[in-house]
Length: 235
Image (cartoon, rainbow, N blue to C red; front, side, top):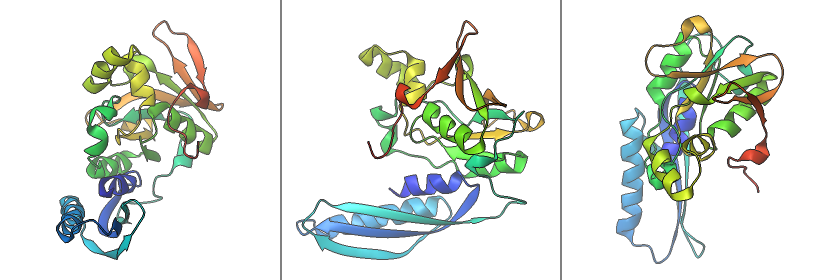
């Protein structure tokens, strides 16, 4: 819960400063269990340059829940990055391999704080973390900015977990990379001249138009729609 909140800060090129925890636990939960949860949130916050500064504790009959709020400070220059700031001519980059998170990485999130700050310093205008699937999140980014994003499937870095999971599901590894979600890598758009040689992989480009288009291995283009996959909140 803490890592997911911190990942959202990474997507705004902000440095974490503080974390709040609202913990509502069943009466059957022991004090030791509750203290361990609090200690875990504090430890992860401190690993990322913040601290647990407050929140709320309550007992309940409903299932135990944890809600974490992460507060950060934007220390960069100019306008902070946003989903609506992709520009025609930008290159689309991603900070790491994708897919197969269900094999365990969805519970071991590593917020890309430093990568977000570096990408923005290089000129990244649009920035977000990949939580609902690369394709769905790029679709959102294109929609917010009123542009078309062309994604080159050959260039998308595929995580070894996606290849392992594909053997079980009989789906293509790239299908998992596009649609599994919970990767919490960062995707950004920035001027071609500013694309870093490390920290990120170029996977596409921003063009005039709207929506997300996939460039297949044979060079054919296929429009992507939300019906193709990814996680949609609210059903």
